[in-house]
Amino acid sequence: MEKRRRRVIILGAAGRDFHNFNTFFRNNADYEVVAFTATQIPDIAGRVYPAELAGPLYPNGIPIEDEAKLPELVKKYDVDEVILAYSDLPHQYVMERAAIALATGADFKLMGPKATTVESTKPVVSVCAIRTGCGKSQTTRRVLDILRSKGLKVISIRHPMPYGDLVAQKVQRFADYSDLDKHNCTIEEREEYEPHIDRKSVIYAGVDYEAILRSAEAENPDVILWDGGNNDFPFYKSDLQIVVVDPHRPGHEISYYPGMANLLMADVIVINKEETANREDIETVRKNIAKWNPNAIVVDAASPIFVDDPAMIRGKKVLVVEDGPTLTHGEMRYGAGYVAAKRFGAREIIDPRPFAVGSIVETYKKYNHLDVILPAMGYGEKQIKELEETINKSDAEVVIIGTPIDLRRVMHINKPAVRVRYELQEIGEPTLDQILTDFLKQKGLLK
Image (cartoon, rainbow, N blue to C red):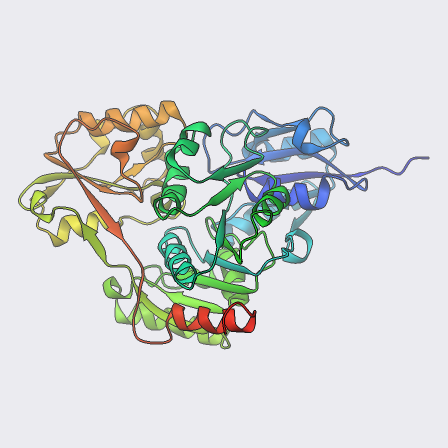
């Protein structure tokens, strides 16, 4: 009698879930993944993880269902295991999902690095965070700049954001702006890829991260740079793991999944945004680092803002647009654009909600901590148009663009706009340059 395969549902958000499947389940005849579920990202549920990516054990692909249906899905498919595989979640939320799964009779599991990380033939430096919006992107840019300044060839690989045609997105390579159009990139994707392109540096992303890694290695880089997403831990075995923490959210470094795991695994911890944080909050974060990972090297850092034309802000009625994920599941109430509005004397920061249309209205309902900031939601062409319409309907005199890319590249804004940028700067020592120099010497890449 043929042994029954253990039936599995993977809870996800079109990222870690697909990776866990690809690395552990795809060719594993002991398991049958009967469904993925989706949350956090719009328009993922209702699709299918395609057979071309799922492999020969799944000739019909795997359905992607709404996570809200979990209890009925467990019953429908007689599920044995429910596996949580997405990130930036309060510990309470994780255990609520566990309770829901256990109440159905199924096991509840989290998969760790041993089962899911892929090993590279090249040294890997990873940059991760304990929450979305800590400043991981500017830290990654800083690390990239340091490595390249030493004459090294670096290929970056970004945590997945596959919101389109998954087969077409299996392996994506971005080297110039035409690649962004070719792959129909969302605003969120452009925010992560454009800074690398601006530096004439190659960045990969996609769905199948072993295939992505092998493609990157074929370019013979000296170093692979993992650019993490949300607060997930790396997909690749890291030789140097850098983790960014945020004193604007003290305590989150030990109360979010899997950010706390990142804190514990970190070789280097960057305390970012110190220039705008309260001293007491910085000390709270520092004490938690000392308690949970006393062997980590701690780097103090700031993320100062740079405004193209500060005079445009003074005395004006402004609309502030900020990075979407930082405000939504990152739970921040404001970002660099808001800081710039206050610092450079805006007369008024308007409430965008009366001007919101379509999915932007729904975003405000779902993330009701937001009030005077407009999140740059752009997970597809329709939503980008709704964001554009919301901005253009507003009665602002000036739009402050606090997103990592200039939104004017992807939409028409019918009023004056000013761009806010931010970069990482270390405070005192040790610096990332010193740390990376020591690491590269250990790896024989520097004398």
